[in-house]
Image 1 (tube, each protein chain N blue to C red):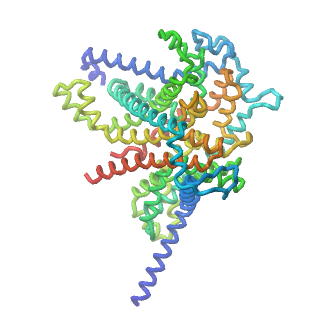
Image 2 (image 1 turned 135 degrees about the vertical axis):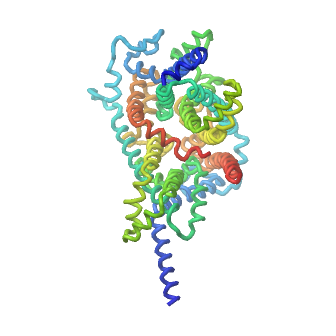
Length: 289
Length: 304
């Protein structure tokens, strides 16, 4: 290995070093908004916009977080970040489970089972991909308000039962599994449900993880649906709470940045911990050819 | 003997059908309830004058009047124009930037550095758009770091970017480009890793320089990725909403109104459900055109 490095001419090595430095500078530019966010969240309002920017404040001012989380304050206009956090987590986890389960079932049927109308249904599913959720937003709102389901997390979770792109990704994965396994299990007298749950689903675990990741992030970051369906603060998801907070504190950037940190940093931590998984999920089924 | 055999296979087929449909049931119910029925309803409501305040059922069928009104409504024209400008500017710029950076990383960075750089740049993509909006609102504010930076770079009187009629939309576009760059770099990097290396080696022997390699080898080989990212980029640009809603509320004036933002305000601020549905149908048609282009392209590739 070291011999190979030596063979590279000096001019090329200089270029390499130069480009690496360039890329690192570029990366810094990309993450600077986040660094500023973290730094500002520990400052007093007076210092937030001070120039030159003091990236590491002399004094870490934790009151921003205390205020945002409502610790030690008795006023009734407290912020309920933890509650929104919990709501977001709940909605995202249940949505993910629901959509992955339903897509794994439908994907399996499309990949391995013979049934009447399969071709027609397949086309119907494909066609659904073209219907944007923005088009169905108004009818969904009308239906949910008629059923008294606005201000309920059900209005965010229930529609996740249909996830066409996940269904197609899982169909693709199931198609790659060997038929012999199924046949053998059938010989042993296993029913189709048992084969699905105990043999087939474990075989497509990587795709399941990928699909689940995409669904979770989508639900976690969803803004338009909760904005329309949820108005009561007790039911707010995190993006709604954050938006309300931005509106209420307007120029208290230190407070707002603390709120943003609370919203963003845990997600970053999870992302960094499981990045290989995450990033694989993003490319599965995306680029063919 | 024969007839019973047919009978057995028929009941077997019926059973298989039943089993398959139980697997499909949840997703099929969802498809009908949350997609098919709403789609038909949307199309119908777009042909009525329905206002939510009048209650359900209190609507008049007015044919295509909503669609005619759209073209005389300066807010609609502005939101359509902004959405298109947004798409035409952000999609090519982010793709080109992402491609160049991805190739730079791939060609020159040590593997470990490359991995770290990609992950760092990817961060905004997993980040809540409301949080991103909040951070950039602070950066863009009158004494915010971005505005100060512009001052330091010699711009004497930088505007308040998000409150300026000319600058609000470009300011949002910059945020969107920034936020989506890492994802696109990552997608390009993934395809770069799968390119055949021997092509480059023989090119190197022929004395081809870096720029030529990029234009004549890398870019053509990455065409499928570029196509995919262009289509998905256009689709997500057509649907852009959060930034306009959080950062500018569509303002100042109509300068950052987008189609989805106008659907939102028409339906849920003014309760003009019929009119809002008509806008949504226009959006649907725009997306349909893009999707059809994608299908034609993909089918052509498959038959080739």
